[in-house]
Amino acid sequence: MKISSLLVGLLLSLNVFASRIEADVIGMTCGMCVESITKELKATEKVEHIRIDLDAKLLSMEEVKGKKISDSEIKNAVKKAGKQYEAMKIRRKS
Ligand SMILES: [Cu+2]
Image 1 (tube, rainbow, N blue to C red):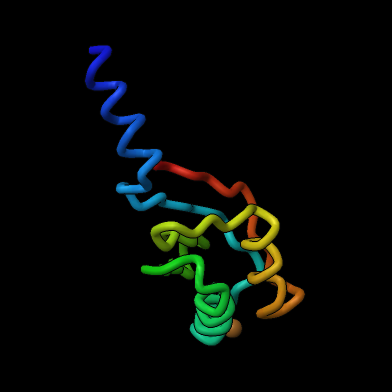
Image 2 (image 1 turned 180 degrees about the vertical axis):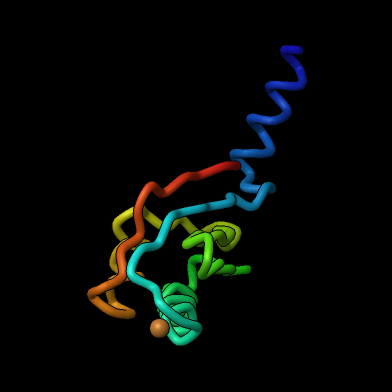
């Protein structure tokens, strides 16, 4: 038990696991909205594998290894795509 939690801690500190991020995004109405938001998030160069489900209003992506993106950076990137968009309830799962 102890050794396995030490190992997980070590792997986490080495950033071996891609950190998964999810958020709700409001204000999207069509595929163009999805494209613009995806483009702005990609431009941060801190996230990859960006998926946006328009119907579920759900954004999911992974942090690029060795990079850290803050909640406000995520919110700003989404807002930059259009001021009607807003990222909410940002969840992080390692
Ligand atoms: Cu649209």
